[in-house]
Length: 115
Image (cartoon, rainbow, N blue to C red; front, top):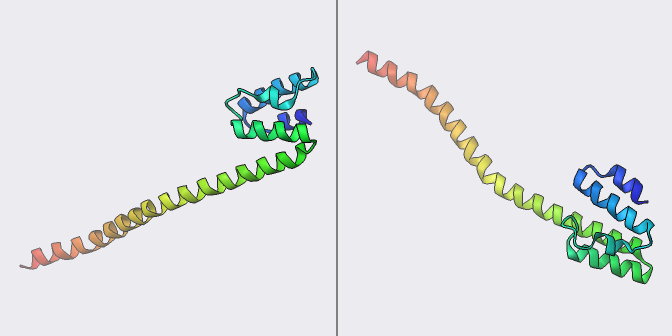
């Protein structure tokens, strides 16, 4: 199972960590012990994996971790979107202002030539 995860993950750092965890699990260590102390996996994830291993419900715990990460990503996307909206509005305002000024400037120049 970990071999499939290693091949699917797109991050080289995660692939190396999973490879090391795969070796440790093959030697008989627990998955949670294999990924403990790794910066890729936060302590809450390691604790949830450990609880899942001990209770025999590892699949459910991994689903919960996936849901937790999904909610976290959604919250980050919402935060980034809310921060990007004012910047986009400002950019559009500057663009419209530039277009208006570029249209009115020749009219003012014509006014100066007539006088």
